Every structure is written in C-alpha cells, then in structure tokens.
Length: 474
Image 1 (cartoon, helix red, strand yellow):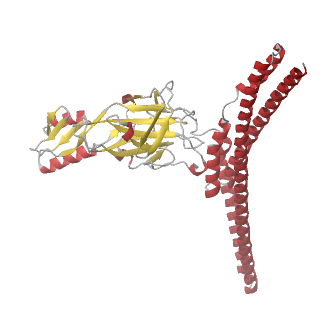
Image 2: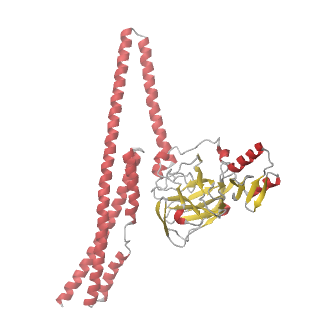
C-alpha cells in the first residue's frame, strides 16, 4: 500500500502524506475530514496536544515500503542510453530475461515474499513499482532489504532509479553496490537501505513517481522491510571477511559465497578464510603464550637467586627484546620486498597484455588480407574442386574467430583489482599473488590462441602460394 493521501492542517498548510487506510481511520475518529478523494484536513476541533500528536504521526508515516506485489518487469524493447545529472549511462537490456517473485525464509524463520532479478551475464534487468502519486516538493524515504548485486569482476550494475512524470533524462540514480551508499544495517548477508528523496515542485496536485531497480552482471534480491524503529536494537552483522572478498553475500550460493570447490572458492570461501584466520590466530597465540611462559620462568629463577643472577636475567630479557625487534624489522623489510615483486609482476603482465592485444589486431588484418587474396585467385584461376575444398576448410576455421578476444576485456577488471590490492595493500599478499596467477594463466591461454591462429594463417598463405606457382607454370 502506498502513501498517496495528502494531509493538510486547518489552515490548508501541507503536513505530509499517509496511507488511505490511516486516512479513513483519522476521519472515522473525528480527527480529520476529506477535502477530496486524495486529501484530508486535520480537524480544527482537536485539542492542541492532540493536534501535535496527529501531525507527528503523519510525518512519521512519510515512508515508502517495498512490496513485491506492486512491482513488475519493466524491460525496454531496445538497449537504452541516457544522461542525467550524475553522468552518461548506457544499459543493454535483454527482453527474454524473467524476474522471479517467490517466498523465502525471513530472519525469524517466517516466510516473506521477495523479488529476484538479474544474472551473471551483461544483460540488464529492470523492475519498477506502480505509479506512486506523491505530493509535490515533499520529503519521502524508501526502505527495503537488499542482497547480492556484486560480482568478482567489479563490473556489475546494481541501481535504484527514481523517475518523475516518466522523465528518464532527469531521474535520480542511486548506486547500491561497492558501498557508494552505506547501508543502515547488515543481517545474515542482507543490507537494510533507507533512501531519502524529495519530489520536484509541480503545479499539479500529485507527482507521478516510479521506483525502479536495475541489475546486470550479478543477480540481486529485494525483500520488504519494517519501520526503522523496529530494528533499533538489532546488532550489526557485517561480513568479517569483507576486506578479503571481491563481492558481497549473494543468496544464490548456499553459504552466501562460492564454496571451496567452486570458481574462486579456493581463495574466498568462508571455509578457506576461517581456516587461514584460525592458523594465524593459533600461531600468534602459541608465540604469545610461549613468550609469557619464558618470561615467568626467568623471573622465578631471578627471584630464587641473588641480585647478580637477577641482573643477568634482566640483561637476557633485554637481548631477547632486541632480537624480537630485529626480527620485526626484517619481517617488515621482507613484506616490502614481496609487495615490490608483486608490483613488478603486474607491470610485466600489463605490458604482455598490450602486446597480445596488438597481436590479435594484426591477426585479424592478416586474415582479411588473405580473404581478399582468395577472392582474387578464384576470379583469375579455375581452381580444382579439391583445391577449393582445401582452402574453404582452412578458411572455415577463421570464420569462427571473434572480432575481439572477450578474455582481453575481462582481464581489464582483474588488472584493476590487482592494482587496487597492490597499491593499497588492502588484502594479504597471498590474495594479490593469487589474482596475478589468474591473470598469467589467462594471458598464457590467449597467447596459445594467437599462436594457433598464426599457424592457420601461415597454412593458408602456403596453400595459396602453391596454387599460384602451379598456375604460373601452365
């Protein structure tokens, strides 16, 4: 249900908006009366304290709550591009994409209906609310729970769009990924959002407003939320490994993230990260306990001996502290050297990436040149069926080539992640090294493809050389 009933006081001053059911209740109790079908006026007969209470109630109800029953697929027939105050956007929509509305378990185990939209491909999906008739120049707040909407390539689309009078060129766009907007609360992988917006001034009595979610390159889910006061005593439950993971929780995975045997799970699954954290903590604890035990033992021996022995014990402790300090300095130096090596590898891979990009462009140019030469040979010479069949077979292998290597474009995102990790040192060095290993593996695969395609072009060139030599001897 939408708050589409305008509320004014006895002087005609705008107070806020409320739900139709609440408006009928105020009228029934004598606290207000209907001015028209979409407006009520607070009764002037109400005592001042009660009037203030009514005004406060109306202002507190100035919220819009997500109801999946009022939302539906709003997919454009063609790819769209538009410009608003935040910049230029282009979105590729797939008209075959469906949106699922189904029941899932809520936080308390009860069933709640939610919308699930989007997938891992680059096709965008948009769902929109029904028309919300809101008063002009009014403050509103949209409240909902969100899950997913991020991938490990950092190229997803996860947005809330608010349009007025259907004007996409002047819509409000809110990015709901990568902490562009901080959620109010984290709970079991879900994030609670409260998006405030103000309707524009208009001469009309109401502003036709539509809310839309847009998702691409990562599935997302949205479910209803209650009044914000309901969550005032809830504890925040952020992901303890958020700094080590390239994406946030997504309900499509059983644990919220890829399991250990899935792509990326060998580095980012909860099992792997907890195992690693446990090893770090247990190792550190053993060192601390061992150090404390040694110090206690030394103190006990010192107290049991004369002053000279105590002085010797203190001297030994001082030497141990100095040794620990030296070890820490050496460890920091080793870590610095390790990050320097990783930075050098990144530069090497970026250079290799550029060379492979140029290589594939040259291969495409060679292929086009050989195709032109083949047409010329067909026109000039009368080819035998077996010669033509042999050339057509070899050229058939080149027709399956893509115009560009999609893998090269995918590497751009991985290079961005690697640069972020290495420049800011925001993850363990092992994680950054793992990303570099993945980049190297893909570069090796692309290089093999280039070599294979080069062999095919050489074979074509030799076949046509042979045909021209034979024809010239006739």
